[in-house]
Length: 313
Image (cartoon, rainbow, N blue to C red; front, side):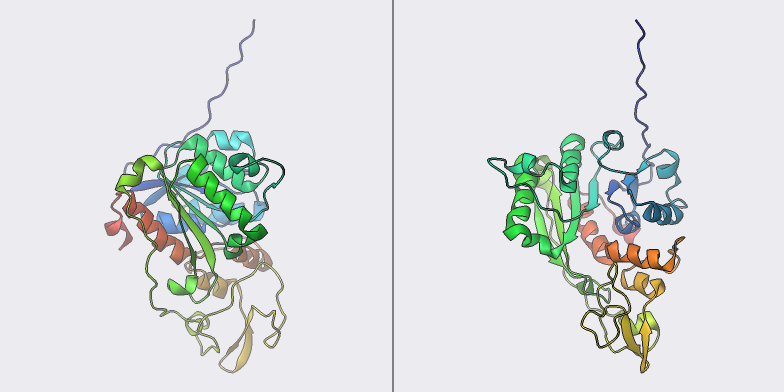
């Protein structure tokens, strides 16, 4: 009888000098990665299915995290069981910005089973099987009211009752955390129940806005806080209610480019887009704002009793 040898999933060894570990699901262009890496974290696994976003992700993070790519831990479709199997267990923080989708309301189904077939179910399944110490999830603020609140109620039940994690959630505006764009998003943070006695988590207090759209454009802008960067619908003009990309700068109309948009979202000047300008703006429209993610993540790490103060200064 011929016995087939199963190839064990590849693993990535943790660096000795990393302060904590994280994984980056639905990674996009890596807003979570950028924020947590700047705090001393090491990305042990990431997944993103969009080929253009993958190109941008690799271009910017290979120089600082080559092991992530060389060990084949930058994967594609997260619904692929093989891509889930190789996710490391017991990492410190699971990060994910996931799409808002309706859940089944059929019959008697409740909780975990009700989410089956959605991308949130994939996150829940990974949490169940891989046991991260904490999670940091991001979604649009409308998730609260989605499907008359049923969607968020199901998410809470799954995370708290089925998976045994605490849950903290808050609508966070990027403009309350140093960036000149409102971009309200629902942040959800949770900690494994066996750690809850040592957890003292709270969302960070807002900070004064010192970086405005005038700084972004390097000229006098008609707005201190810019519009939310969107995925599409450009070019409607200053006087159109749908406008999000036109501003009055030094008395003249200007449209934002990816250079201005990445500054609004908290990405550094040296962050590059090896894609078209249209793709770059689309990727920024789909991204998380970096600074609020960093400040919330810092409180998560402190709650896990990992000292990142020296690294983050």
